[in-house]
Image (cartoon, rainbow over all chains, first blue to last red; front, side, top):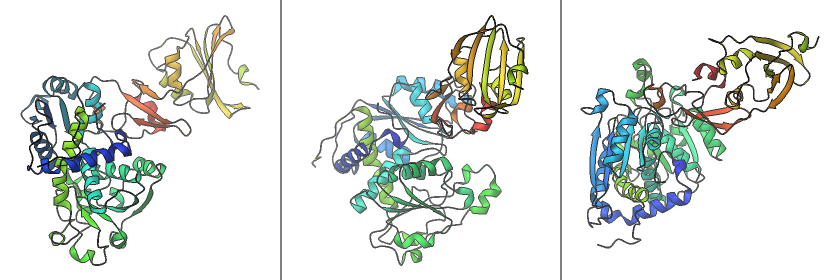
Length: 310
Length: 155
């Protein structure tokens, strides 16, 4: 089965294998080498919700491997006319060899996977999961620290609706991470996720205070407070701008600590951090390309050569 | 006074004993016996029980519940004992089984779950995470379900 809906779909060994493959594909991701492993294959890019990086990096990944991409957005398609997701997916099943789906409703990716034969990659379902983002996050962390084992990771911001942190925390506890969850009370990580993390042996610390944990962190993972996920704008206003990481906050940080962000950022990550040695978020965004290449190949059962020569 | 004396024996039907105290009405709702039926139903609630302290009992006349219906009971009365009565005698004892998933029995309560669209055709699917304490999660969105309210989401 080539679906990737949550991080439970990959074992730790499979995660490391995908990350190794992503590293092998770096020259292809950069456009230095053309390696048409997916020639003749078609990716359905199904974005029922806004996306910049996920959509573009999947498209780049597919094209750099010689494949084709079909783009569907809900605006101007039959989705706007009230078509069910099931019906839309039946159509995609006939048009594409693999599909990535982003959808505002939680569970939409699993639902799509159940509806069709082709492999489905979850590109973000409501406030649920975002496993392909997690894979590129893990790639970024592993490239910086050499390993995923036993890291001290801070996650900051909207942990309630932030699907990137949901998937990433699930993966990291499986590699023995110590995770500090920093959020206002109203945006705490959902209970079922925290209890899952603890039952997987995760050492979890929840706090509203960002500054205390910075100096011991190996990774600071900032997230945007997502206005679009709040049912009530007043609730958003109460917590918007509550955290702001600046260069000054990082004076006592470990030398190898990296600052990550799934982007887009608003105010939570100051531009002053960009020029520090800790900033890794633009690199992280690029890493979506090799990682998604490796994931596309995995789902389509295409073997990646260990060494890709120029 | 034993509970058997509170309700007369039934000739044919189903007797459900050892329902957790106060849950008999939920059981009726879960079995969809609460509306639109003409079978006589007797119910006793909060009677003393050696095993449970207090318990509820239901007797449904002229209706033999099938295994699929009884498995629904597992959600609120997993330890209930069920007897099929024929001609005033216990003809069969049936056990309640809590499987690993619930298909088209209960729908997810989470407002942003994909299955909330009534036009989506795939079956509602919930996973049993643990039996004691009972933990149920939507197979699609992954949200935990509130067991106390689950009866409100029966399909």
